[in-house]
Length: 233
Image 1 (cartoon, one colour):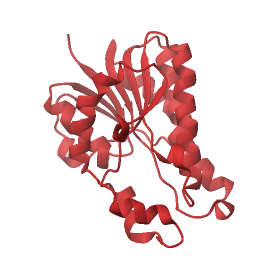
Image 2 (cartoon, rainbow, N blue to C red; image 1 turned 45 degrees about the horizontal axis):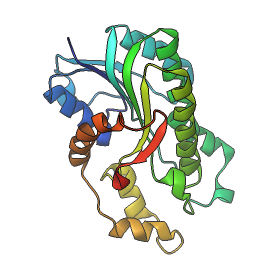
Image 3 (cartoon, rainbow, N blue to C red; image 1 turned 135 degrees about the horizontal axis):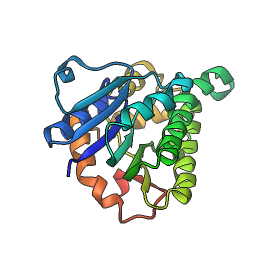
């Protein structure tokens, strides 16, 4: 039987590293992302569909189209996400928060709705969350809210998708453009969490992808709908 995975946000960072790893392992990869990296363009086992998840009206159609290519999915990785600007909550507009929520939460809701409506056989779903969902450090505003909402969303859908195991997973600190922005551009005196991040251990996207590949089967031991932080496993 072919092994199929579905993943969002393969343009860079962790999503790209996961796509590469699963292709190397012989999986068929179904991917939604804003763009396709050049080094994946000639991969015969990659089925890619350009989809900007911030355009919510496109998400269901894109998901239906790409998942129609297979009759089962071993694991769906809801990876796509944005940080937004690190700044105080009272300075963050509702428009900015909504932009983060659309990609980090509502796009994932629409994808999960397609899995249910199309009766897709999906063994496991992992939504990439963050410790920010729990920590709520100063300046993380819309990102913390969105990841807390994502954790709740996954728990709610776990009650409805009885034949699928769902997890919200914090992957630890990954050296992506998102993290580089925080470490290089954000005032660590105003936002003390940045100082802690600078001192904390970090992994490259490739190292994180390898770690998650080994961890995903272990998640099945936890109650469906759980939030798990890899640093506490």
